[in-house]
Image (cartoon, rainbow, N blue to C red; front, side):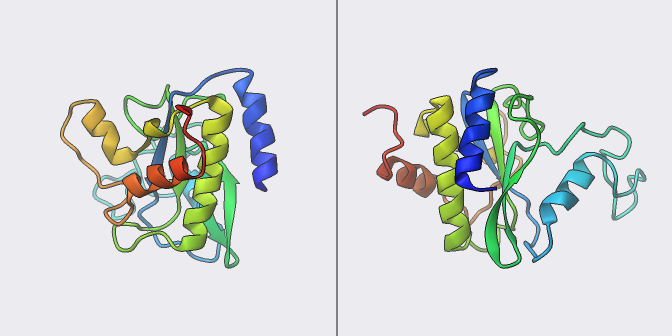
Length: 185
């Protein structure tokens, strides 16, 4: 999907609903050359994994599947190029962050950013995709948050490093502001 196609889809959705936040995630998996996004979709919809909690392939969604992947948008490498992947409908509540599913547009970057920062080409596409989301839905840059930051906003102990220990949310917000996406100007 191109950035232009993304913008058109976002504009259609904005006629039907609003979003208050963008919540950024990582998959905490290696990004390969295959479409890992579809594997995440199968996981969330309970089509792969085991219902046995003792199994190494245990997937809680086997018994209680989501109706689609939990995120609205994904960024992943497909055949060596960064790509935008569509997730659930932009008009549906998310399934990605407790307390934020009804107000947070979920974006997942495929990769494990606990181990290393996102590569520059993935980072740049993420910036451009988020820029489209916040411009269409009029979301202030300050409300572009990492999954881990949702815990702080909910005033509960932080349980995850998502979108990763090496994923700098302050840098992301700073670069979004530097590119003229702040609504405070």
